[in-house]
Length: 238
Image (cartoon, rainbow, N blue to C red; front, side):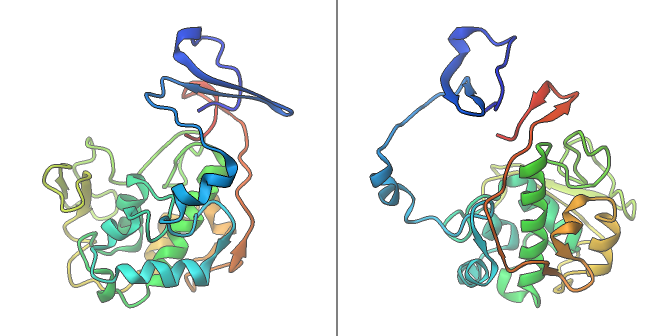
C-alpha cells in the first residue's frame, strides 16, 4: 500500500485507488478486497487484541498479552487475538534483541512487560518512519539482526544461528535464534543487551531501555510519514 501515486505501476495492478484530502492511497497487486460498512466493523475485529499502532494502553495490552501464558514467546507475539499488529519480523527480532529464546513459554519470562514494551516501541517507530528496521543501522532501509536467511552467525557473539522453516515451526512461521545468546535457560529480558543493540535506533524515544518501561503508558495512533527510500522510492509501510 502506497500513500503516494506509484507512477511506474500500470493501471491493471492498481487494485484500489482512493483520493484523499492529503493525497492518494493506492493498493497494488492485492489479491482480495472486502468492503464493509463502518457500523459493521466491530463484527469483523472484535476478536482482535489491542492494536499496537492504534490508541495504545500498555496496561490493557499487557493484561491481554499475558493470557497467552502457555504459548512460546514468538507465537504469543504473532497471536493477533492477544495483541494486534506484530508480524514475523518482530516475533523473530524481539526475542533476539532481548536475549531470550523464542520457544520459551511466555509464563516462564520474568518480565513480560519489558519484552512487550520493546516490541511496541520498535513497531510504532517503524510504522511511523516506514522501513521495518530493527537494528538502528542504515535506518532508511529494512535491516534485521537474524531474520535474514543469509545470516548464519550471530552478529553479537559469532555463534551459529539456528533456523526453522514455517513447516517445522510450532507457530508455522520461519524463525531464527542464536544458540548462545538465546539459551533456553535465559528467562529474563537482558536490558543491557537491548540497550546496546538498539543504541542507534529511534525507538529509544518511546522506551527507557534501562528499565524496560515505555515513556508513556497510553499513546495516540501512529501517524505515518512519507520517506525517501532507495528501496523503491517514496514508499510507506504495508
